[in-house]
Structure formats: structure tokens, C-alpha cells
Image 1 (spheres, rainbow, N blue to C red):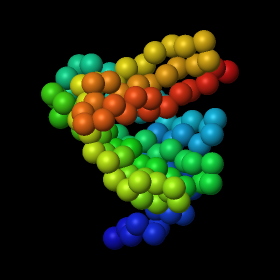
Image 2 (tube, rainbow, N blue to C red; image 1 turned 180 degrees about the vertical axis):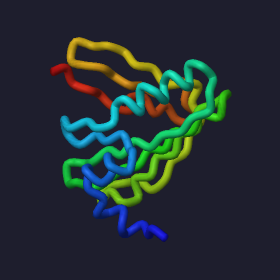
Image 3 (cartoon, helix red, strand yellow; image 1 turned 120 degrees about the vertical axis):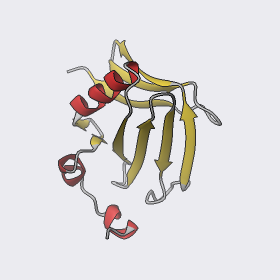
Image 4 (cartoon, rainbow, N blue to C red; image 1 turned 90 degrees about the vertical axis):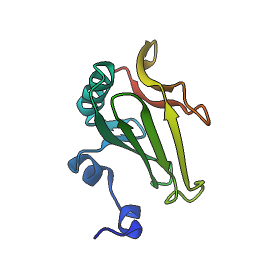
Amino acid sequence: MVSACSNARLSPEKAKARGDVVVDYGVIGNMDKLDQFIANVTANTASKIRVTRYTMEGDPIFIDLHYDGKQLLVNIDSSLDTYGGGINKSTCTGIVRAVGVDGDHYNLVGCQPANIGELLVVPKG
């Protein structure tokens, strides 16, 4: 059994090893898994993935994306972030990748009740 306290010490390396897409201030891991997830959503194939983003203080924020073949359920857990706001849930219509001058932007679109917007940016380089 994993307790919430053990996640507080989840290093980016451990998160990547367990299969999470990792975003840690310029260090990105397992992007192939996110690209596959987007391909599955585009093909209306059920799929799920976890993105673990780290704050400047090193606190993890867990973003669970679950696509059931029709809608994208998003669960953002910032309860381990010192400045976090707990757990927020949304339903989105999709996820898109947009190429920008500074890198690739991954955005959640059509989210209710709140517009989540940018999931992560992969800098050029």
C-alpha cells in the first residue's frame, strides 16, 4: 500500500521509472507515452496516463488523464504541493499538441467546469 506521504518524496527519476510523463523544470521524461496517449484519443481508443509536474520547491503535482473512448477525464492532485489547492476534477473534449516558436505546447481543450489550458511545454532544443 502506498501512502500519500510516500508520494511527497517521489523523485522525478522514480516517477519516470514507474511510467509517468515527468516535467521537472526543463527535464522532460516519457514524452513518447504522452504522444501515444494523444494518438489513442485521436483514434477514440480508451487510454490513461499520469503526468507528474514538479514545482520550484520540488513538490509533485499529479495529473491523471483518463480517456474512455468518448470523453477525457482529468484529475489534478496538488495536495502535496506546499501552495497547492487539493484535488480538482474536470472533463475535457481533448488534448492537442501545438508547435510554437519556443517548443511544443500540449493543451487540454474544452474543459468543464474550468479551463485547464496548458498541460506542459517541451522546449526546443
